[in-house]
Amino acid sequence: TAILVLHGPNLNLLGRREPEIYGTATLDEINASLARFAANAGVELSCFQSNAEHELVERIQRAAEDGTDWILINPAAFTHTSVAIRDALAAVDLPFIEIHLSNPERREAFRQHSYFSDLAVGKICGFGADSYLLALQAVVNRIDTTG
Ligand code: DQA
Image (cartoon, protein in one colour):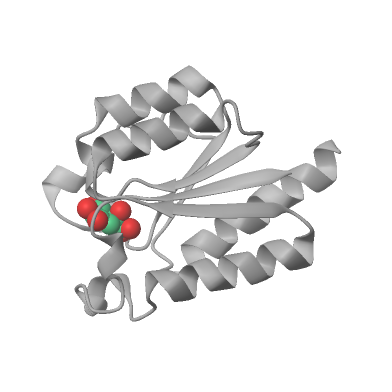
């Protein structure tokens, strides 16, 4: 099973970006803990971060051809703006989990709408870096039960 983790804009700044909201773990640390978890679970994992909408769209399009089975995505600010990334996920028709470090529903009004939630298998938010690990655990559980 191959899992692709996608990180949207400004997540390259994790660790020093509004740590009271997003925590102190850096993106490299989050990716490293996901990689450890994946290795233990015997699944393949790759991570990709971009600040550019078109690069995320292109990476999702490639996922249809590179053997990706699941996508874990934190679209970051694109959560609230990007029809293009939503359409890419719909086009490749791969199951995905929407992830947020913070809980957007506790925050500003403009964060209340997501272009992704109604297409996602599920959504995990509000647990900081653990949101990613919980999502990965959910995928691993689904592999175990579906074979
Ligand atoms: C975020 C929440 C978004 O509203 C915000 O734009 C982000 C990060 C989160 O992980 O909590 O950049 O996706």
